[in-house]
Image (tube, rainbow, N blue to C red; front, side, top):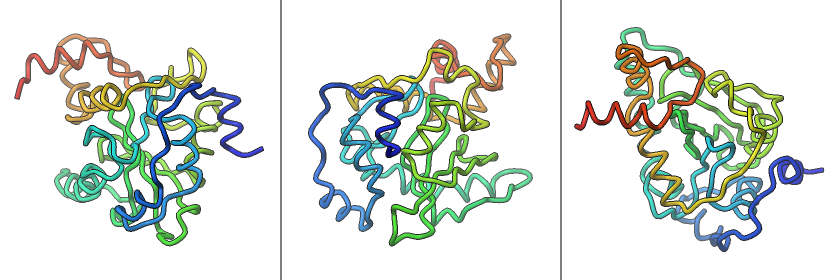
Length: 226
């Protein structure tokens, strides 16, 4: 049984999905091949969220916030070292920024990356997860679909993911790219640590490993409109 068939049994995809992109065109624009499991995953599921939390970037998405071919993956790669050097006590990076290719985001501002040390063999790329480009980092030594299977069946626990991620069981919620990426953008356009610190200072009970409720984000935005 393949990882994709296991994922489908665990977390059924929608019955109707948008047409698959022209993968040769996508890879040509990126000047790199992409993992076969990712291409099959996007073709099978289309846009949406796993457990209402994990959004994968899609080729040629209408929003820059989740466009695999857009500016965000390149921008994030450039910001990783900037954020590290700006810290009072810079942390050790587990991977060179040159070997990180952003391909997903969560509702709490965690970024999902491919680790592309073997650039010419994308099927060997592994997965790294990071909170807002800061420490800590979590690395999964396997491909993306396998990572999703193990996260959604509870085998793999990602330290920065919320403890209640699977409280309602694994699920995939299809959405338009506009709605899913606008939600991700609203949550990740600012460091989530800033929101958590603000919430704590203003009397909001926000456990570390829980999702940041939308109303907390909106309250923060009201007080910090810039």
